Amino acid sequence: MSDGTDRELLRGEALTRVYPDGAVQALRGVSMAVARHESVAITGPSGCGKSTLLHLLGGLDRPTSGEVYFDGTRLQELDLDTFHARRIGFIFQSFHLLPTLTAAENVQVPMFEGPWPRLERAARAERLLEEVGLAHRRKHLPSRLSVGERQRVAIARALANEPTLILADEPTGNLDSVTQTEVLELLNRLRRERSLTLIVVTHSPEVAAWADRILKLRDGLVIDHD
Image 1 (cartoon, rainbow, N blue to C red):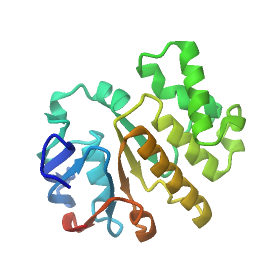
Image 2 (tube, one colour):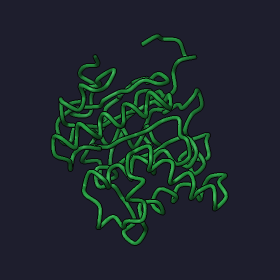
Image 3 (tube, rainbow, N blue to C red):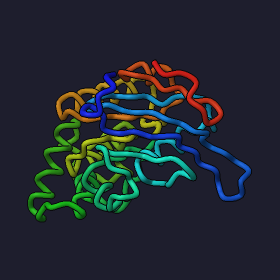
């Protein structure tokens, strides 16, 4: 990756995170940068700080010390509600789909924070579900979808407000190997087609191998980056 800041989308500088009781220091001075349109996998054993780092990069948590910059601006200077609604899409291992809403209605949820009128929300949700191969399941509740289908709905929802950055926390953790490959192929296709930046937290070397670059953590420290 070039050192040029014109290509840099996201940067963390000397990030530490110590939890309130002081017993756990989840991150110990982690610095990293991610280029526009790049895919990065953050890997390491359980408890090494992977998800903590992702939450700091996405503004879901604040570092004890250090700074996160998005497109050259410190996160703490941004309106985080607008930042989350317009610039970032989140994908979680447990999907976080609302059980009483259909697939299409779940995809529309982030659009209530965006500029989309009601009819456009519905049309966009259908287009996004078509992109992930689930247009025919748009009226189904999550309980009537397979695990892989639920993750596809979550991916469509993450794209709802045309984000610049996708943050995915163990997005294949609940999937079998065949469905995992299908979801990874889908994420990579969408990243290329939409010129997205993608950061994936994973414990799986097979998943990490799909990324342009791998950042390895251990005990809250970066021990390697490929």
